[in-house]
Length: 73
Image 1 (cartoon, helix red, strand yellow):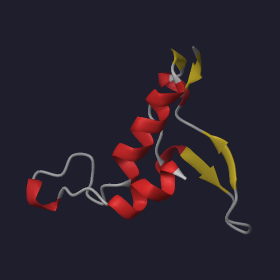
Image 2: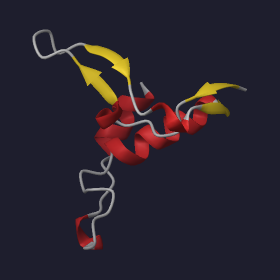
Image 3: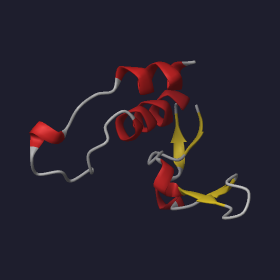
Image 4: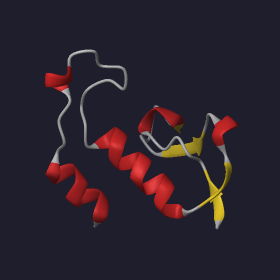
């Protein structure tokens, strides 16, 4: 167990406009005790699928194996 964000996605990282480097994690209302794999799984869910989270057309929902492999590495 550790502190987990539980909504791990790029939209929840504040990025510096000049450097492109992540400054901090935002949207902290979901932070609670959990397993690191919760955050990893959630980041895979959001990063490996280019469709919006609320995409109504399921034909646009795909899984990118190259993105997944990059996250695993």
